[in-house]
Image (cartoon, rainbow, N blue to C red; front, side, top):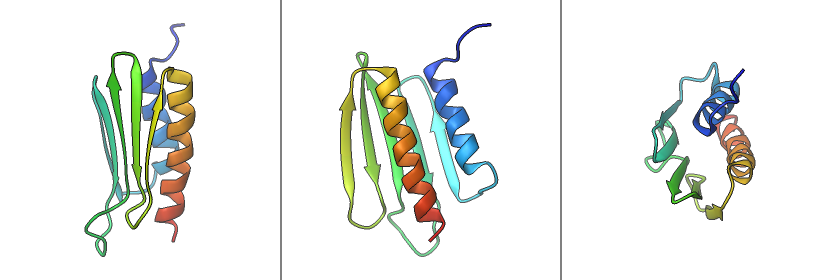
Length: 96
């Protein structure tokens, strides 16, 4: 059995956190991953963006109000761990 690719692992994480929630849109391609919450009362909604650049991952998190974070990691393992942490924050924002 082949190991999951990084994109497939992230897609499975997204589906596990937001399986029954229609207020989330995501797009995964070879160079980047975009996850955005859809909120009617917030024009600048929370988002998580990941860019893959030369084996390095730049992870951008915006909570939709005032907190912005940019994390750079060098391994898929660290990127997956950071993305999981931010996905948990997105779930908390949705449950407010």
